Image (tube, rainbow, N blue to C red; front, side, top):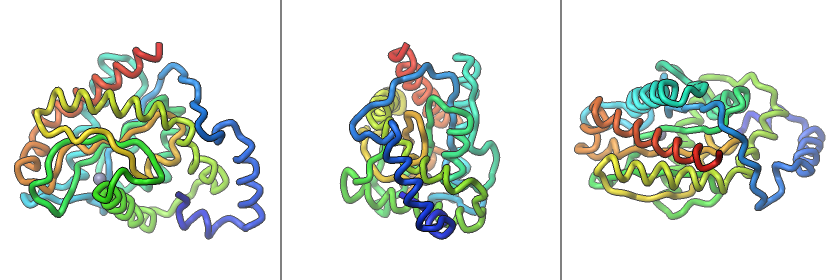
Length: 263
Ligand SMILES: [Zn+2]
C-alpha cells in the first residue's frame, strides 16, 4: 500500500516509469519465492513510540513501552547467543514512520524483520498470542480491524515525522515483501509455535493481514501480537518483566529454528 506521501511527491510520468521498472524486476514475479540467503542481520521493530502510544490498557500501560521492553530483550538474546548483527527501528521512546521502519531494515540488508506489538480489542475477554505475515487481504473481519488500527495509528506518525527518503526507492520497497511471503509464513509458524509453548496463553495461530509496516520489507518479515493489552489479566502479564522475557525467548527460539532450517 502506498502512502499519501508517495502519491503527492511523484509526478505521474515518473510513477509510471517506476512501475514499469518494478514490474520487470525479479522481486515481483507473483508466486515466485526469493532464494533464502544466510541470515546475517536481524532488524527488530518495537511497535509504535513517541506520541504514537499504540493501544492503552485499563491499568494505564502503553503498548509502545511494552513492545520496546520485549524488543530490547530479544536483541540481547540474539546478540548473546547467535552473534548476529541486530538493529532496532527504535531503541527508545521516539516516533518512527512505517516507511522508516522498512527503510532501516532494507538499508541494513536485514535477513529477518520482527515487528513486536500488543493486541487490542473492544472485547475485554479477547486473549492470546498471534503472529501475522503480510497479505493484502485480511484473514477475517477481526483481523481486518486490527490491521486498520495498527496502520491508522501510524498515519499519525507519518504526519509528525515527515519522511525524507527517496520516493522512488520507497515505491519499489512498497512491493518488496511480495517475494518473501512464503518464507514469512514459515517464520510466523515457527515463532507462533514457540509462543504457544512458552506463554501458556491462548494460541490464536498465524494469520495474514495488510500491515503497512511489513509491505516494504525485503526479507522474511512477521508481526507478533504477544497478548492483549485490552484484557486486564494479559495487560498485567505484558507489563511484567518475566512475561516480557518469555515473549522474547519464544520469538528468539522461533528465529533460531528458522535460521537453522535454512542452513
Ligand atoms: Zn501495535
